[in-house]
Image 1 (tube, helix red, strand yellow):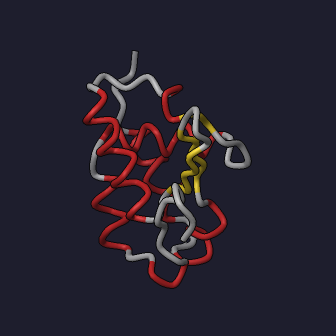
Image 2: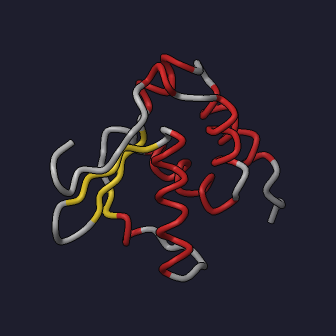
Length: 110
């Protein structure tokens, strides 16, 4: 691994328990849902509007990355993230979409 490169689990190392644990948090589900809406795009981590402090955001990014839900890259001036949609679909077909759909159905109607 090169200097500044972040560690990501390989597809065969993805664990359903770690993925579900990462998705148990509403803020992380929100990030994954936003990324899933545009799976081919990278987003600057700072672009997510989460109601938490910087240290909590950093922890959320690490949990998502270590569970294998996202790929992150350090660009020097910022940290970028994208959903590992193909990897997740190959390992756990339909899981992420099912969790996102279930979460959206549980939102209160306005």
